[in-house]
Length: 174
Image (cartoon, rainbow, N blue to C red):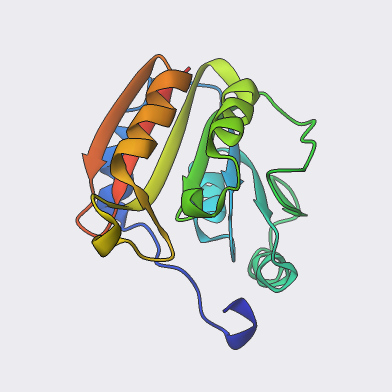
């Protein structure tokens, strides 16, 4: 997809503001963007004052992210790797974002635990995913709504759900 110049949908500024209203105030400004793609959300968080790291397994996506970030000589680190297997030493992170990649995690419970371990004590996960309520409604990038709720609920102490019209946002605290 990235090789053809396409990209995933971005978060609208109004959605970002609604999400930020659910985050604890005065967090440290460290950010990990899992499945960063071409880096749009990673750069957005950088411009909001975060030291950001974006990770994606697609080398063409990471190349595009770096090219779009070439004028920034600090603050964003891009890693071309698979989150399931990468060892991230920069943590802990006060904010971890994961947009439209949850359905692709091989072991969702293990990834949720890994994310939790990378969060600071007052850190937050913002997971945006398309969800389905039945197999008839499933798509390649959607996850079963109840499975997402169960996995996140068993991993995090607080899970809030926010409808973004085109996807569902889960805001989780450690």
